[in-house]
Length: 383
Image (cartoon, rainbow, N blue to C red; front, side, top):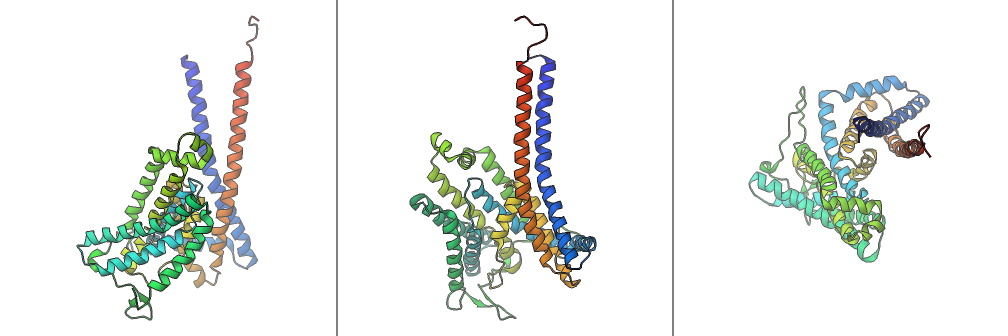
């Protein structure tokens, strides 16, 4: 291959890489702009000035304390989205993440409150219990799918309800609950102070600390990327998600992959409640955060199951949730933020599909041009 042809080849490759990068970036940006436009229309209909409202949210959202809270919310959102994304990469819809993390947090909190161990060891035990409980609860879904062919969507939804019932039964004074001092609330026995996960003074200008668990969440994102892209298991997982029949023809044990993937998804789901449990509440009570599993579904879709995309989606979602607090004080309906979040998810799915179709069309046109150039005979060439 001559230097000129090599240069031309590299130019074409780099051009395709740049095109793919711009297209991948265009989809979420267009989705956010579209969601902002829809939200602006709703604000106008309700008699509120859109630009003033958005400006109010941005100003409040970048206050030091709000930024710290945004990072804390984003930490739990990120873990929730990772748990969902593991299943998504294999075309498994683990909608039971919500029940898995709540049951895992409850049992881990009870174990943490009952044990008296050196601080770091007790933290490790609490996290291990949460991971095991979350994994085993999700494993029921995988087992039902591989042995009886039950859809993971149906079984995981039902197990959410079962987990709620089991949690309500366990969190009673006869079993695990004790009165929470200074309130009518009940919860598990508090985890000793030595086993609290230390926070980080990451945002200057506020005494609110960022969950130290943000480091664990970042490490989980790295582990997720390495597992999917640098291991044989990750390759088999992605291959099965792309085409189950092709994976079977290649010797992949699909049933085993389904079961292991659900176990991994549930294990990560078990970590969702740990930032709150070990960094703020130190017990599982009636007001423990709920619904994080469903938020994770939206963020995983927004981030296209990529660890960096999920991180951006978690920060955006958390920013909107926290900046919405100022709206109520100004007499603006906070439901505006819910409308914006829902519109973002719907529009980003549509935008990614449009970009995907455009990319396929562009690639087909490129191949057509190259084939036409290669088959054209030079002028004056011998027949």
